[in-house]
Image (tube, rainbow, N blue to C red):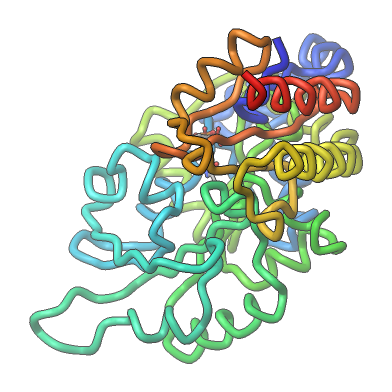
Length: 341
Ligand code: TLP
């Protein structure tokens, strides 16, 4: 099977397994796990932030961040298909007691103007807007990235209106590669960022939240509340360190494969907006071919290719460490054959 469902299916590398085996560990709830401390410091340093916090998953990273930034009854702004709103089991409502003001967008990217228009007035009837959430790269929009000048404008707005910015950077390193910058150049525009070690970077588990020390101290309490105070978690952090040290540059291969895959999809006759294919995610529409996404995915599965259903007519394929250039050629052939049937 060629598994293009997600970059979450990546297997840890041999070097990660070796580092996990040898990891020096302690009780992280006491702040005594040296490997966790090393990973948190490394993540903070790479993103240009004061401190970092290791959490179990991207979802936990986002939800703990929102809990830390907001009060019950607040409103937060995010894009209409943002993972934090769309795919986190209503955690915003349940865990933070906030409501989301969602803004539809073109290709997942919000502008400072549309965000400003959604900020609530000071009015006894209205909730307070206390957080702006940006997803970079944007998953459901096809892995699209925020241009740096858009981020700079949003930052200016956030400062002017005194509202913090949280970035869901589950695939921050993919965004940075696509923009030709290091991650700190993106992270500088957000107060807090969460980025996943367990997607394209191949660690088996883990996400880092990075931001100001006072924020991270408060977030640590919410992580504990959610049952995320892990003990000898250095076993996991060891793989995360290897991920940050050895797996960042190779993401270029995934982006190349995604571009080749997208070209093949367009060539085969599927509807695809090639301008969205900026990183390792490829989303295409099968409606023109009289198919539903679920049928398409089922047929592909029979032909040895796994893809995700991302809407009634939308199929998603994600390239990653387990996918070779040869696999992409095979998938292109499979798509051609599928349409000839
Ligand atoms: N995304 C998963 C699924 O949940 C859709 C995937 O396969 O892409 N933010 C973004 C932008 C994400 O794409 C994801 C995971 C998360 C947060 C949550 O990360 P995890 O799965 O570690 O909780």
